[in-house]
Length: 292
Image (cartoon, rainbow, N blue to C red; front, side, top):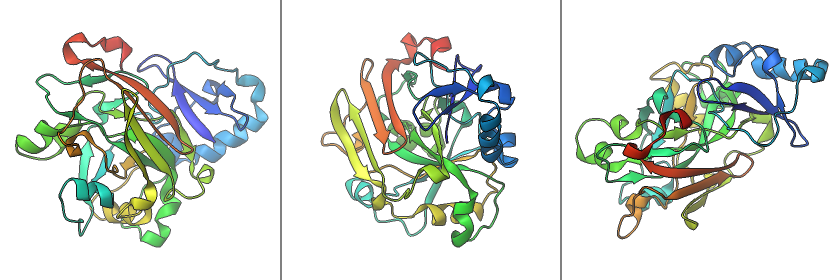
């Protein structure tokens, strides 16, 4: 199944994209796509419920706002420098262990909402990524068992303010967690929908110019190892998001570097996980209610 959330910010409803492409409202199921949903076998329960209750699932129509496809995860965990060619463009050695950092859940936004350049930002950058959503509570899982912990996959852009991240001391988190810096969606494809998450094309354009175009086959640390590794240091909760890293082509890697400016348009996508289109707006010009 493909799960999505739609409607105005903070009032999203749950929806499902059927095999034929029709979008239906599953609000009558009575649950959002949150920690409780995933921890209680929600994906299977919802599939069975739809079969028996199609008359309670009206179409959503095509004119709608997509919200984040997961409702307020407890954690957004990201992996840095996890594509070989991205490490090369950054002039960095291949990491011996995954580089792990956290992104604040308050950064979550809809996949087509405006991305807001924060106050005092000079170096807001883009990073298209494959994100994994966790299905069940997980600690110290072995790599060979890790894929059983995956609910599904979705598209993520790990927007980053490079000056906040790298030039102002401390942890990466403060350059990663600005409002709107974690668009997620347009939908969550359940694990059975993606045959091989390690062979997916992912791409990103800025103002129509392709900046990133790669494949998840270039991952340094693959998904089973990432989940196992992270679970050694913290429990993964149902609905948590683990973003697996970005390929080469980020703004900081261009010569000269190029960063986002007010009025830019960012488009990005991954095979089987949809596409997004976002306007870039300066903090001073944002429309708060229309973004999150």
